Image (cartoon, rainbow, N blue to C red; front, side):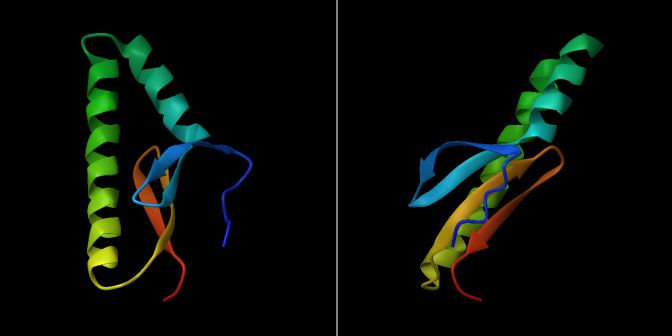
Length: 85
């Protein structure tokens, strides 16, 4: 069940699920890089916390026997898609 959109880029796999980054993440990081005073570091910390949150969804789903097909990172959130409901 591939639902990756053309405006997101695959960057690898984690626990069998494809990980992709939406273009909005790159836009947010670019904007924060020009803010100064650690804006880029703040943006990277935000992305890492969102990734860890989505990874937790993936692991809890795996614990209950669900198979995650993809994990997509967006600027202000993420989405973990499972094969079944």
